[in-house]
Length: 294
Image (tube, rainbow, N blue to C red; front, top):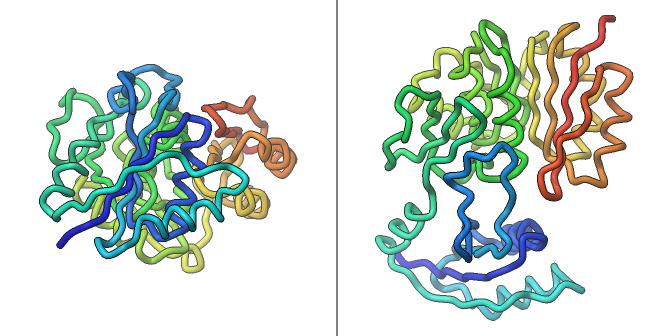
């Protein structure tokens, strides 16, 4: 089987916008990597940034017309212009090799690594989450996921229960139990995400410590730690419910917010949580806090 690969080079300020637009016009996968000499994947800095020049590679079925794709993009991005692009057809073997070459072990925080299955973990004694890029959101490379992972890495999770609301690939729930949590609940509205989470949990040997369910089926209960990496609208709407889920003294971590959305989200949670100053990573924000006593 063959695939059409379209490659763009953009500034870091436009990378997220173009990535979302490509997915909206039918890209099967979008990957980001440095177009220069800097590299995010081996980043050990506690505050990594996007590359100044980012290469975006989008995968489409081989019979896709790249000109049609860029016309769709022009309509989605207007008035922003579509950046220069190149396209080529890859046979399946070539694509698999190119895809694998883009992903390397990623250090997040002080203890945690996220490693594709085809790489040997750089630090065997570290906390290693084995995770391959796939169809569910969450590989550790996006700023919102990276912030949540660093927050979990810095937390005392020993013996605690964790709720990962909007689990995607399950990366946050899996990391939590590997970092010491007694048990984690992985919840999402997408059944496909639950299947991916189940596969990733089994690969990491923690399936017996995860409860995986659709959000509508989750038996509401109190947890010690709640982390949610979803969109601003749901985060704001779910504030009263999340307050019920977190026990007094428990911890809350929220991401998926763009900087202009942070104040509204802070206001939604201020009545329930003692909130910390926002953490900002490029255009993205993470909020955290401790549940007030009732």
